[in-house]
Length: 361
Image (cartoon, rainbow, N blue to C red; front, side, top):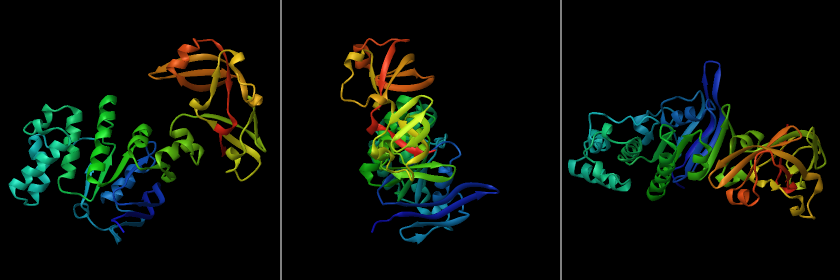
């Protein structure tokens, strides 16, 4: 059995505000997990309890089989990386990284070797004698990352470490963090509100809302099979159709949709108020009705008009008005150009029954 991190019935209250509610979670040694959710959902509070900066109101935090609720942060041997780099401005890169080792009275030659090894790991050996002010934001965060690794922590905690950086640097640096985690085999607990970040680097994602865990799963499962309407809405983009279910038919002001039996199998009833959802890339778009296959479910064909077009690189996102409702549809840039689609074009949309998800309203 590895050195697992276990949260049991973890609750944190601040006066009348409940920040984290009855959380149960097990993190395996060497696992990379992400807490994902909107501001105020309790993800940072959870990280601070794991780090030892906040004391749980109720419940237990266990590491390697031992309860650590009362263990001070310095004794937990957990590294932490913050959103702000928190580097000492009067120290060089090497001095910043080696500071924790110096405090532990590690010999100078061993500190220098450890610093050099870590700088090589993130490609910053040539910045060794520079001061933080002479580095870019991305370089400073790399230094902050390896500084937290210098003392051989058993778990690394990261609190929105990339949110202060621009988009392109964020993408490259998150890949760097994942590479370092795999290379070292270290357990990482990462907090972010950026869904793309969470899905791209973690082994498992913990989606939080109002202090509760909504779902814990692998990134692909979170995206393809969200368990709640909140997860379907927060992770990725979805179109929602609120209406009345009768068997596997949903009716609303936009007409009717037929859903596959699998799509409604998770519901506790066959009649009632539901919210049906479908991802933008799952909707088929036709400009010419002669291209519509003959063997599809005709009930799920809807006519509409393109009202907004947004280019997102390889994907083109269109907002299409159907019966007064805006539908988001994603197609490749190649297909968009091939169909010569433009604003105000009349189009037909097809909503495959098997690509719907249904949630209790």
